[in-house]
Length: 136
View (cartoon, rainbow, N blue to C red):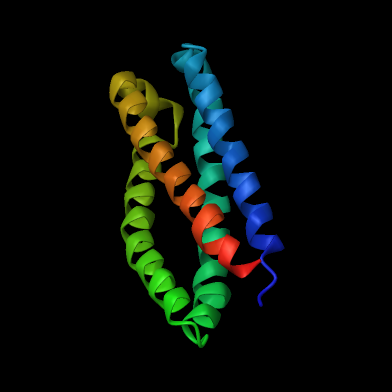
């Protein structure tokens, strides 16, 4: 089987970035912390890009070439699902990666951040609990 320790480590780093953003929002000092939030969003974006590129270039092609039909089906569904999440996150990042963009509409920032971070956590959780457990 594939060694997924690097993918698991990347998940841990992505979760940490998500929790850092959520903690600042929970403080209810978004305007004061907007510059830091913009940086954290950009940092999360970079981590996601590296992770998704690793999945797209190494993990998923290997899984699609496996002899396990269940694994192939799960992998293909994750590939299909992630394409949309990737573009949605990119739009989110472009809308809220600076202090000015965040402060322009704090309420929209809070709503959109909650949606995208929950979608990311759900996706990571699915991979951790469904896909990665099959690979261990």
